[in-house]
Image 1 (cartoon, rainbow, N blue to C red):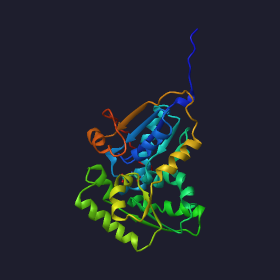
Image 2 (image 1 turned 45 degrees about the vertical axis):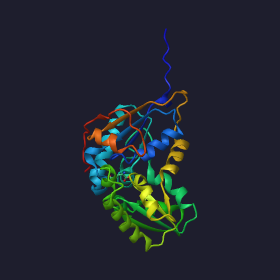
Image 3 (image 1 turned 90 degrees about the horizontal axis):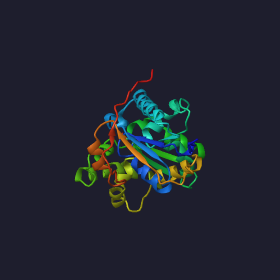
Image 4 (image 1 turned 135 degrees about the vertical axis):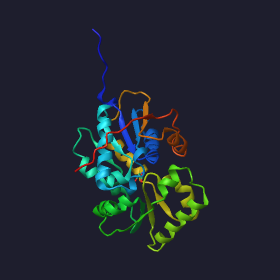
Length: 271
Ligand code: DGL
């Protein structure tokens, strides 16, 4: 009689974002936990998420989680601030696997780091939700938080225009507005924004920019049933459109070796 060596902890962890942004989280996870089997979904057909309504964002998140359910994932990581801000609260109890949202999972550590004034750069939908301010103040009620939307930054990253004059001017314009608030630290509250760190840091060498991904992957590690099969992790990358562009513009954070598989999502809007 043959026995099947089935280890439930070796089921894959599914990540998602609207595009290459979530790879800034995914790459850190792969370094921290190289033995985990992983999947990544870039929802390029619906990019950018930042200009979408709550109903649309809940629909996108559901369709990706439904897809991951068919892949028998053990957990899903929302490597997207916009989806964490607008969809997580609604969908978190709809699945029988844990769902990790970036904002809610990293707020405690950021809030308790000791700053009094924190700035947040994020998408329009994230700023509109107020979730960053709410989550941070939950752990430090005296904290002053100022959130600014940067509507052009996702497209700058997704079209490979990071080192252009236009990007530099847009980034500086947002920094000028933020400077008036006099933040001690600025959170990069969209997973696409760490791609702009070099430009941001050059414009403001004295400012501390926080990439929540570092805290987030530690949080996931502490709350995940870790793979104990002692294997080197497998990966599968999916997109809903634009596979070539995804490969081309992901390079800063992750070397996507093979062309992602295209999956057409069944996007239902929530009523
Ligand atoms: N990278 C995502 C986030 O963290 C979504 C950006 C977008 O598509 O607008 O918010």
